[in-house]
Length: 165
Image (cartoon, rainbow, N blue to C red):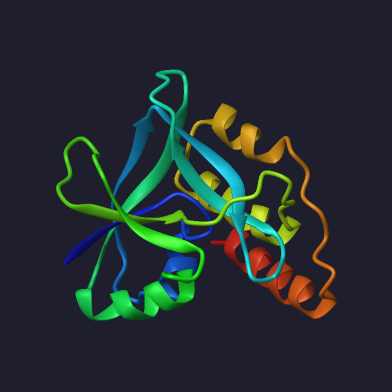
């Protein structure tokens, strides 16, 4: 089994299992000296999650380590855009060996996040009981509504379902 660190829209297991059905939570972890940003350039023009190393002990990113079947990694790579905005990175997470995640290869600090995308991150963070101050830090910067009304409505309906789980 592969170990995958989710920190953004894949935090919620139901969302991740759409991409990697075998995904099982191993543990909630924190990366000290890292910072969560919404500056990964997406093909839809919005900002998606990324983590950057700061080496500042006051910066912390919370996330979840999942185990996934190696046969499902290709589908997850495609869903995440590996090679098209995200690269695969290995992380030093205490207590875990050989954990991979996706980090942005193209960033733009002027990008805005769509409300539905931000919602996936918040719902996943709350599902796993991440610290309230951390969740509030994600909520504090308001997203914008996706100009693609159909995509917005579809994702908002999915989010409503995740909130009930």
